Image (cartoon, rainbow, N blue to C red):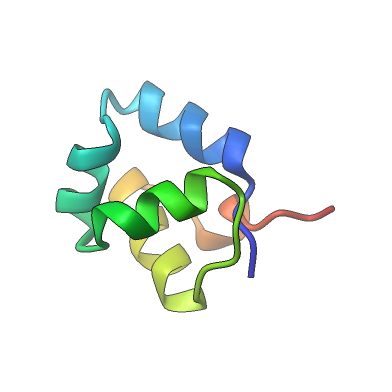
Length: 65
């Protein structure tokens, strides 16, 4: 699945988290967060972890295009 990279970056910025902080809070590796921010495919589990760290529903992060 692909994450909407723009939405991910926006939500992280609104939360005041940089890539490393998002990785730490979500329990996802730094490399995987970078991969998601680049719009590359990640697992559903990763999307759920990132969404939880950003306090949003996982559906909000999924790229609909």
